[in-house]
Structure formats: structure tokens, C-alpha cells
Length: 253
Ligand code: PGA
Image (cartoon, rainbow, N blue to C red):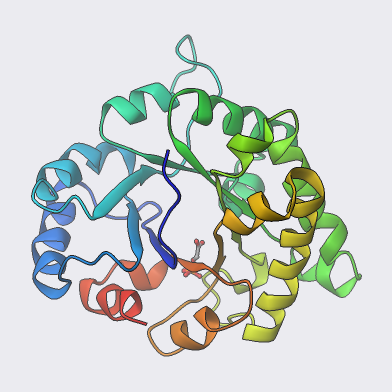
């Protein structure tokens, strides 16, 4: 797996857009956004829309795809789940792992996140691991303990050369879908802590390779300032990635 050109700008569609809306989105987005080699752009549509996305992006190898979740087993009696190998077969190259909605609405634990990361690597997917604290945790002074604990659990037992190939996303829970983004200073502070912990685990050079994305109420009007912050190597965009115009604007930031 090659290193990714930074910045990495990713759109997480969550439970929005079936195949028809996916085709509509991409027919417009492709008109708006010329191919580029100076950044990495990727999308996380719902898994049922992956085939439509692959077809719509056939002429645009610069636009990459991933799934929003994948299981740790390769196959088996796990109704409703998809494995990373299946996702890869369907055209995904990335898997979001440990998004806060998975953690908080579906009870995903740090330990499960670790198993999912290992399975994603094994299947040849790049994990995009999400970490982030709640408002309560931040106000209790537990920011570092929470996000570094999430990071440690996600990479436990994974070879340093693989860890160097992942993508990390800092998404403070209080900023997701709320319209209240972290300030560039808050983002830089959290990203710096994550980078230092990565460096302790895998060394400075490898830690520097890992793109650390910021997510949480990213919009066209704040994207540039967030991207300019130290240690912010990209953006993970939810709501504003659903509209081709606004996401195209963010990819130009
Ligand atoms: P938001 O979501 O941009 O709508 O805040 C971000 C995310 O959950 O990845």
C-alpha cells in the first residue's frame, strides 16, 4: 500500500444515499471536481451503494471508496455484518473503523475496534480509525486519556510498518453533526497528542506518515482554517459531504 498524498479529504455519508442517489451525486461531483494528484479524495457510501459508486467512478481512479464499518471475521453466522474481504471485493479500499456513532449508538468497544483494524489490514483495506472524546470527558479533563486509550487499543498487536499505513481521524463527539466545530487550535492540540503517541509506538518517521484527519462539523467555510492547523492532514466530512457543491468546495480548500 502506497503512502497517501496529503491532504486526505473524506466524505462519510452515514445512512444516506442508496444506489440511485449515489449515481446522481457522482454524475454531478465529477463535473464539479477535476482529477487531481495533489490530494487524496475518498468516499464512504453505504455498503449497498458501493457497486453503484464503483460504476459511476469507473473513469475517475483518483476518487477512492471505502465502507463505513466492517467485521473482524472473514465470514460466518454474523447476520447483518460485512467482512473486509467482501468490501474489498466490492471495490472498497478503505474501512472506517470505530466511528463515534458505531461506538456510542451500537456499543462498539475499543477491543472490537482493534480486532476490526487487524482484519481490515489482513484483507488489504486501509483502516481509517476514528477516535474522539465526548463533551463530558473533555470537561472532566480526560481528553488525552480517552483518545490515546482509543488509539492504543486500535493498534495493539499491529506491526509498526502496518500502523504507518493507516489513517487516523480525530472526531470530537461534541462536534459531530452539531454545527460546532473544534477550533483549529483544539484540533492541533489533539492531533499533536495523537502524533506523539504514535511516535512512541512506531517511531517518529513512521508516525509522520500517518495522515491525521479532523472531523466534526467541517463545512466549506471552516475547512481551510482547519486544514492549515499543525498536524491536521485532512478532513473527515459528514453532513457537508452529501451535497456535491459543498463537498467539491471542501476538496478545494
Ligand atoms: P459531520 O460528521 O461533518 O456531519 O459533523 C462528521 C463525521 O461524523 O464523520
